[in-house]
Amino acid sequence: MTCIRVPGSSANLGPGFDAVGMAVSLYAEVGVVDVEMPERARRADEHHPATIAYRRAGGAGEVWVRSDIPMGRGLGFSGAVRVGGAALGLCESTGAVLDDPHVRARVIELTAELEGHADNVAASMLGGVVGTNGHRAACIPLGCDLDVVVWIPDFTTSTSESRAKMPATVPFADAVFNVTHTALLLAALASGDIDALAEATADRLHQDLRLSKAEPSRRALEVMIASGAVAAWLSGSGPTVACFARPGDAGRIAAGLPDDGRARILSIDSDGARSVVV
Image 1 (cartoon, rainbow, N blue to C red):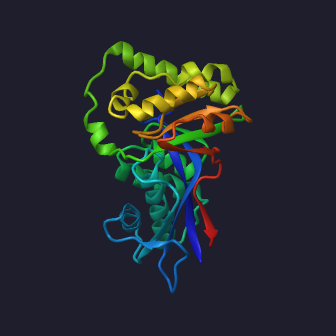
Image 2 (cartoon, rainbow, N blue to C red; image 1 turned 90 degrees about the vertical axis):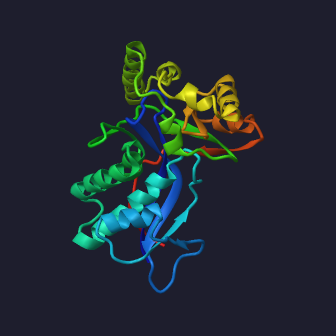
């Protein structure tokens, strides 16, 4: 049977709030329920984000979901399953193929509306590292080879609750700080200037506020930096924290992370959402 396989994501990468996302090698699959479903797949009810996206895109059947992306941890579960559902529904209702640029753009448009922001869904749809203004998205060419280490705690975070606690306005200096550091982040990734990434992922808009409610995550992030990570950040709204590691360093960094969470070594997924046979 055919389904849509979609990578999870790590959003913001520090200063790129709602503007930068990265696809990572954790996956969700969404397919139409037929005679049978693959092992570990579960039917998605009408309230599931995959089903809502599927319906919004014109899908008429019932969908199943299979995922190894942890829910409520800042690794893009809802964005990934929404991309899968919308892609499935759009291809079903229009007869188009997923590789059509217009289909991919429409999936991002639909799912960004459902998510409330586009960084996760754009990364999951397109793969790699993306920049987005909420309506359009473009991939950033990577000039360096980096591994990704994530530390996933047992507790969860509600993105909507986390966003609701953020201030409606910020000081001008903080806004400028984040704009300049986001520009540096994208330039460093594209040029391969690894030494600039640690400074480039600094943030003044959201990380300190969110980390103040997740002290274990703050400690894990500090351990990543002390262990030689290239750069580290709060993944999405958390509570997962993530870092870039030079090839060969990821295992050592992961091994030293606190044992009240689970460390995983991931890669940057460069393919994005794809139609696959399972």
